[in-house]
Image 1: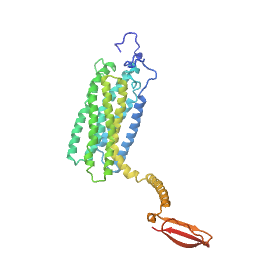
Image 2: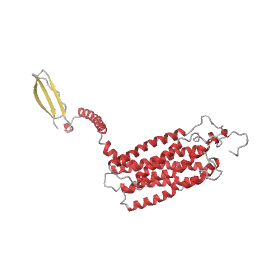
Image 3: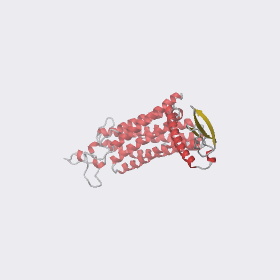
Image 4: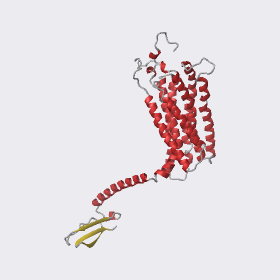
Length: 377
């Protein structure tokens, strides 16, 4: 801002020129703020319900509180902080040519500091919770334990390296004339490359989280359908993998300096999707247990099953009746029942029989002869 010529109003100067040559739109420009807020709030609420379900089940099963549980809690808390700050970004979710440089004020720089600080630990705990869950579940597999140790060690170094860098580059130092201004923002650009490394780590970790349990799952002594179901639980992490790939792409766009504010907002959306999906993956096995032990035994589930069976049975009976009427072969009636009652004042009335094998019995009903006909298989 100091470099602006005298007499220039900085509130009318955009961060970048519009590639189309159109003038900046500071009044009602396109913005990703609603998308950032919607994705963050909705996924935070869903993941919170999954975390609560996880702990309710653990309490009922009297399962001790473990490191994976602690990691899930810390991951969600840090993610909630990240979402809260991201939702308050305001105008810095527009295209760069629609964003005045005055939006890069001290409040924005402080928010950027917070998101940069919690980003690494947040993702570490979300993914570590899954790996620790694998360790507790499959701890007899030596090769799996070794893979988890190695992966956790790499993740610690990768995700936590930005914490000291944030304190060094992205905030004013004591006993200096530094302030929360554009100079600090320029220093914070040193985190661009480490952030790209972390984005690559996200992809590698998500692939490992998906692949590691598969050899064990498909060796389990259970029907193939159940094996696929168990694998599908962990396959939900593929959504996190997709979000990680998009985060890497948008970080590259930021480093290249193309529409940095818009790419930054897209990055916030992808990061929130990634972290909350990872938290959901950590809770999925517990959710599956709740489904099998509670929901399937509930009256609502039983009523729905009965209704579906009734509808299916009605359709089957209608189809069978049509097939029965059209069939000329008595052999096709062997698996079908047929009951018919005819009552008439005329004792000589001749009953109408369907095709098949019948037994005729005459009965008296209130002095009125009737005919009861029944087919036998």
